[in-house]
Image 1 (spheres, rainbow, N blue to C red):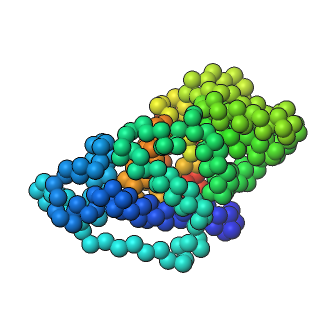
Image 2 (cartoon, one colour; image 1 turned 45 degrees about the vertical axis):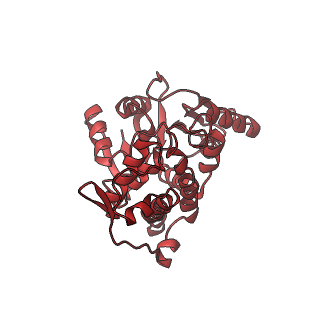
Image 3 (tube, rainbow, N blue to C red; image 1 turned 135 degrees about the horizontal axis):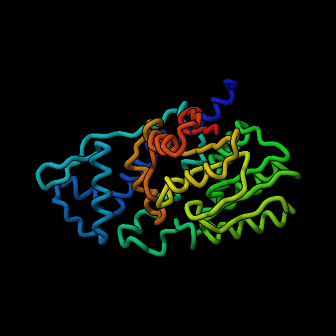
Length: 317
């Protein structure tokens, strides 16, 4: 594969790495906004009366300790020396819009300090589908869709299953296989599925359709040349069942591409990512690549599996 191709993948992974520093900076600013950091200057015990949600406070303190910004001394939480810096090289080799997307997510975190389900936390795939519609059109998402398309060499006539398709991918992928292909998107959020369906109808893509369902629960009889799964496995209750159904849908000789942020491959601050991603009630936690590969091998030991860069798992059936 060309050097330029790997360079694109590297930008995705660099974006995740630098954003973990950006999010940690947001964590500190959040603590200042809530008066938590100021209390630590005084070696305060873990009371922090300004925070009503004690689960939030526990998670927040754990992020600081895990990130070596604070430590426990007896019953006191004590700040440690820390600094933040971003190099021009890091910014140049990342996708800046990915950072600003997470800045928006971070701006809602203080509402969780009030309540776990505060109405101003706009992160649900259901009631906040319009927010996710904007997120899914971010250049970061456009980039991983392009990598998936280029690697799979999608062409006119292909049959594609897109598990957890969201609202933007259906038009993008269905255009690559037009007019003789068939695209099926699976989307658990009714509102995201509706947005995707409306876009397909406006474009006249009658070779594409959307199923408002979960890939875990779907009974699939059609065989597909390609299965695509981008940033989805962290939001479902049974990744094993989802992977099983995706393999069932993949024809012999077909390929499946899984894109995600894998904490065992990409170097980044896992705790701070999960702290903010848990604002989404559907988030279950980031899965390691090795866990996914182990599940796939147990389901079918004849599969050929490779890792593309550090964020794509490619399955050859």
